[in-house]
Image 1 (cartoon, rainbow, N blue to C red):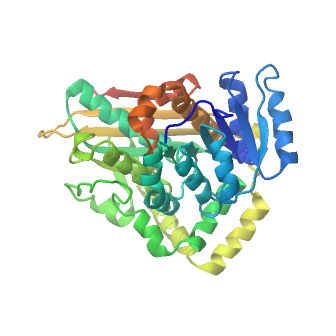
Image 2: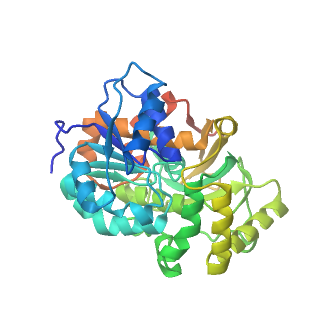
Image 3: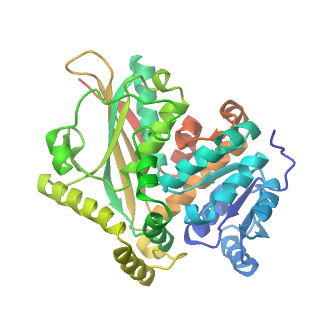
Length: 419
């Protein structure tokens, strides 16, 4: 199904009254073309109208969004998808509310972007709707927010750099969350705590298994992880320092591996490619403590009474739809660093390094990801024709996406390391 430019809207922002949705609407208003035909959507017409007034104050001279109130029934969502070229979806938890949104977009050839980090749900959507979306020309990209754009784009940038500059494949990319200053939103807390209730431990484990999201079977590691990593979760890496377990690594690794497969597997990054992600630790002891604390926390989430207590506490801290104040958000920052090793027969293989950094509200950054990726899909006809459709990944948007993020104030750089 070819997408028609005669649709009423270029994009619809679904979930515009939530914390992330409002910030995304703000970025659209401030930064996207003033002639963009767009609408805000959700269940409450009154609350959506308030969002329209709020964003109008940021740029009163631009074309303002229309209001499209809807339920989350499949019938209503099909009608919504038929009105627009693209839907930006911020309605979470995605496993609870957003499966019919993906279905409606896949069936109607409507492009779709979201900012989930729910790997079991993404696995489910790939199984159900990849073929349908591809058949109808709908480009569906989940996890285009903090999970998993930085990780996916750094891996893509490094593999591309090694191939273009040195004509070499990539053997391994090791990434590390170098800095993370942020407060979770109420919606994020609700998602984390509810995921274990919706999916069984088997389903969660299956979705995070090595290469689970890749359409091509991936390679096995050519070398075993160091003893300190296997037992204590700690790893030393030149140029990155002391690394330990990152709770967000699982979803990011799965998306990077899917990109490898979608781009052709051995013919893309290389036949021996591996991706690992950690977070920076002050020292070995701190890293071991973080590793064991993370492991215990994941075990605790699987115990219903513990989960119920945490849900009550989280709701008292931030209800869904709430998040950090503007003043607190301005102090936030995120930096991801990554080192790539070329796949060559040498005791000292050549290396490349990359960095992603943003200073400012992390949930505003999420809105930036959504809006800028939307513009790539709406404006780059050559790319969308090449991609054809299906359940894809952030890095499939390639250099055009990176260029737009840089223009939005994000640092994303890579270089070949000397020596």
